[in-house]
Length: 297
Image (cartoon, rainbow, N blue to C red):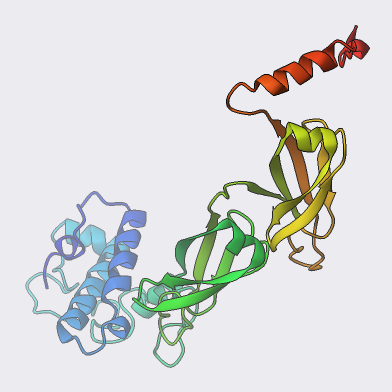
């Protein structure tokens, strides 16, 4: 048998904890139950287990370090035997002081073994990010998503999904081990900003440009909503910043399905180019002594 330190790939100065950590890592990688049919790996697993069995025993390790016994635990000057001073042997289930590599392997996978096989382990979850348009997020939709296994799924986007919300697709992650169920796909939603809509909770907000005439005289205009255009009356004498409400024209609450409202904030827009007629009319109106800031003085 080879030098047990070389077999484990550790220095002679390694602590018991370092030896155990190294062995657990190797056992998880080399165990025959996850390398079925590979005889070379099976032999390597036995070799690693035998090396750890000797080194974990403080007495045997000290005697080996002093050169009193061979790497297989036999006395110097004798052919192998596999820890015969304490019974057990390398070919059996336990080594030296009662060490059982199967117990270590079972602990790595979180529980007892059944019928010689590792405990079933759920597969790893897979994380994805899916970007959707504003209206698709508010009204709900279906979006294709390519998974790591090259499968493409149509993901159902619920109504009024929120930025950063996560959708779980059960069984669409990595395959499980030992007959365990597969992991899930966890999809984080990101939402593209809309040109003029904003969603705050279940309410939709819109800044609406209007002309000076519409503000002063009042007029019925078509307003965009998430369902299409609707007619809304701008009251006479509306100031810039006034907010009007369209009841029930918001987004649906994810639980109750009751829809919020749409709030329309008026913004008076003057002509891009100077308008002499408008200027004359304003000057004439200003002579009446209208002072909109009189309450501030």
